Length: 123
Image (spheres, rainbow, N blue to C red):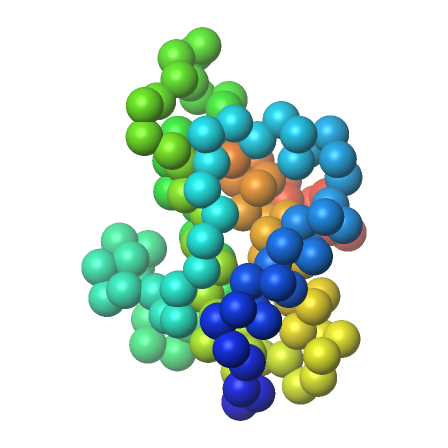
């Protein structure tokens, strides 16, 4: 696994965010984008992940498509998981692309897209 300081990882998240389509980023409202080293045992349990499954990112909140005009008072959260991404990436280019892809994927959940629709768009 590569080693990377938290500050450098945050800088890569910021750079990846800047490469995503501006219209999608500008319309993010009340969303905290942060990172953690690993998903918590509770997060893994809630998602019913097996021990051999990896989680790169997680959206937690109410997707826009289901809000019916109401705005939650607490921010939605997009969490990027540092260690799984570092373990998956073999070089800096793969690392940057995985961070970007994970951000895009979790932002798509914010807009209400499910995995089937996200994978369809990726093809």
